[in-house]
Amino acid sequence: MDLLLFLVLGAAIGILSGFFGIGGGIILTPLLLILGYTPSTAIVLSLLLTLGSTVTGTFAHLRQNNFHLRDAVTIGVSGIIGSAAITPVVFWMERHSGADTVISTLYIVLLLLFAIQFLKPAKKVVRETTVPHASFYKLVAIGTAAGILSSLMGVSGGFLLTPLLMGWVRFPLKQAIGTSIAAATLIVLGGVTSYFMSGTQAPLALGIALIIGALIGSPLGASFLNLFSSQFVKKSLGSFYAAVAASVFLKTTHFEQLSLLLLALFTTGLIGVFFYQKVTQRQTKDCP
Image (cartoon, rainbow, N blue to C red):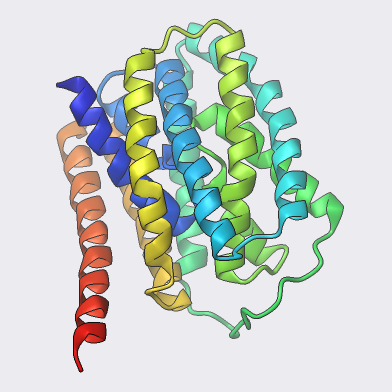
């Protein structure tokens, strides 16, 4: 039963991953913490899920020409270094019973900051026809920060990469999403390797179920992206960040059931909108 549940969970999170260019761990890590898993186990399972969703998402965005390969590799390699550096710190915090509090606080602060960035009115319209030449040092800084957060929070770093590539490097939204998920693949590979080399005891069967689910959901999510305007994607991503932040806050204040309900309702509602738009478009095409 657990395997089936984790398979469905992986597919649902994979859809959101492919659509938003995030790895999915941003949902799964707090969810597993709410369900009572230890921080290191929650992080490893989230990274395994993220690996499945980022690999398939990368190929989907590659077909749509949504990312710049050189920039993605630069960010990814920098992220591997940052990921390897922070992994021992997580195990140290877990031994001293501080990992759960630190991880939850980081989620709330960062998610709220990025939610505000995406939800506030745009000051100007950015054309999405070209990708700017990014500074190598900016890409390295972004990748290192994403790698640290990846192994510290069980995420791909995509939820950090996408807003930074848009706000600091000035990538158009869809190029930022594609580059983010491609770089995240390398970052997550580094994170998974670091944890297994450190002797994690995470249940691999559940991780494999998550990966299979993500392999199904992530390409589907990427295919939904072109059905919506950039403004809709931006506002949806901001709302998504705010909902997850609220869910984590409810968990830290011991409202676990309400936290789970909020995540479930928002996620299923958003995926429902995706499928509704897909069906509507198909019906429009079929009309003479």
